[in-house]
Image (tube, rainbow, N blue to C red; front, side, top):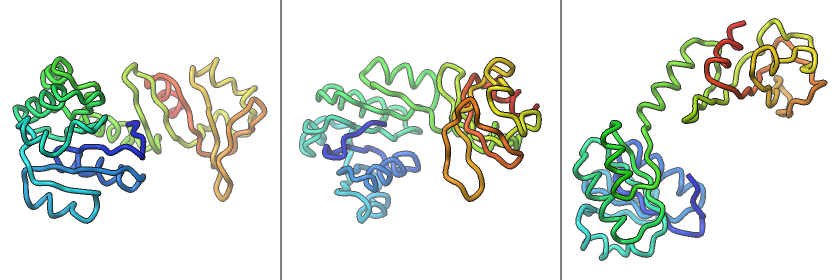
Length: 219
């Protein structure tokens, strides 16, 4: 999420997703207005965010009273209550918020959010589930997937390329992946170049299609 730290961000719904986003934005220097209808959540985040308010953001009048029209960016973290999620996004869009991020619980929910004004729709549980599944094979140390089956992964250097410079192992030609960088124990991360030699204990940052990364990690 791109947010100018000099501009305030509105976060509606302080559950696990919204709360995590709000706290992270705050720690990065953004002013954050957190809103939730649950007084316990409001109290929980009172000391972490710039301001926290107990309110029902499905109501346009409430949003106007909160000064929401002054915000450029809003995050709607409501997922389980689809009606509240939809009404909140609709109200924010009608108030002219240009950058609305919204959490969706399923594909139908996402389509509705996009049609009524959400500029970005995320599936945090689905993405985390995919990430955990890939990490469970124990060959990938970290994994970030994108929408077009492309991913960036951190993995242990496969045995067939040990002791070889990248120009010789030819990972891009043989395995259809690109070695972006190398991390060695006790040393700083280095960007990979053709003459970078790969050692057995190296951890690699590699990009490519998900299926190619999985194959590469298993060779």
